[in-house]
Every structure is written in C-alpha cells, then in structure tokens.
Image (cartoon, rainbow, N blue to C red; front, top):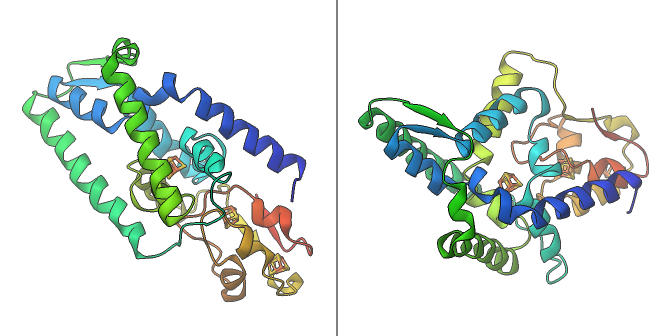
Length: 237
Ligand code: SF4
Ligand code: SF4
Ligand code: SF4
C-alpha cells in the first residue's frame, strides 16, 4: 500500500526524525523538570500545551504525522516487521506521565510559580556533550524497544507526550467538539482484515468497526487502515 497520502506521511515523519537533534529539547521531559526547578516556562512546556490544545481538534494526528519518534519507529521497520501489541503495557505511560507532571507542578510551586517564559530555554546546550548523550539515549531506547517488542512499543508504553493528546481527545469527545477522527461504515466491510494487519499501533480496526466503536486512544490517525481498505469502509475525517 503506497498511496500518495502514505508516501507524504512517511516522508514528513522521516524528515522530522532527521531534524530531531534540533527539536529534541522542545519535546524533552528532562528540560521540563529543569525549567520547573527554576520557575521558567520553557519551550517544551509550550509544545506540550500546544499538543493538548491541538488534540481537541486533531486527536493524535501529531503522533501520526509530525513526531520525530514516529519517523524513527518507521525506520526501525527496516530491521523488524513486528508491530507492538496494543496491550496492558500501554497503561505504563500514564503512570510515568502522572509522576512526571506531578513533580513538575510541585517544582513550579516550590519555585514560587512561573517567573519567565523562555521558548529557547537551555537549547544552547544541545550542541554540547550532554545534549548529544540525551539524543542518543532516547533514540537508543526507541530502537531497542522496537526491536524487542515491535515498532511503536515506545509510543504505547513510555511516551510522556501521548497522555496530553489522549486527554485532549477525550475532552474533545466529552465537549462534542467536531474533530478529526477515524470513521467507518461496517456495511461496506468484507472482513478481509487488511486494516488490522496494517495498523502501526496494533489496533484491531476490523473488530472495532464490527463493534461500532471506532475510537481508540492509541489511534494516531495515520489513515493507513483507510488507504489499504479495498471497500473504502474507513476514513479519517
Ligand atoms: S506516542 Fe509519543 S513518541 Fe509516539 S508518535 Fe506520539 S508523541 Fe511521538
Ligand atoms: S480493510 Fe476494509 S474491508 Fe477489509 S476488514 Fe478492514 S474495513 Fe473491512
Ligand atoms: S486505526 Fe487506522 S488511523 Fe488509527 S493508527 Fe491504526 S491504521 Fe492509523
């Protein structure tokens, strides 16, 4: 399956991965903690807030279409064909997120609140040895998890950003905000199973369509299932 949309999607996330050495501090959980210690609202916190706000309208499209780690997991596909299971390990990321966010809030409280906003906070240290160590540490973890548990294992179980977007998506549904989502028409489905087989997040798309419950917090709206469906039973819109 190589539709124009899928080619574009793959190119975007792979380019995003090549730019990761420059953007890593704007996605960094470590920099967020450091900024909390000093009471500075850093660039990464601005990005996390933007991810939450955007997910009200776009769900987890960032994960499907823009994230550098998505590009790296895509490239891991050259070494493994395994896709990580959408299993219980996914709950681990919420525990990580809860502890991390709780710590940041406490650190800001201890620092006496937000004293400054600095979108480029600490980015000068990207070029130093420590910045490189963080980069290779993160990419190494993603690669090892992909090879051992399958592509997107990091996304399912570790990622500290995913909960912001899951939260935004759930809020969007609760407030009935019109937003991008996976939709399906079960009457068209012939049960071929191609959608489930192609889903990078290991979602049982065919089963969800049959049950009439298309929403899944792990869906990154990449539209691969829609593009592979021979009956045009699925759409991201
Ligand atoms: S789950 Fe995290 S690492 Fe994976 S694509 Fe989304 S933001 Fe990137
Ligand atoms: S790919 Fe389309 S036709 Fe095949 S199981 Fe999925 S929804 Fe049904
Ligand atoms: S369910 Fe479809 S749109 Fe969602 S992640 Fe899987 S393939 Fe992508």
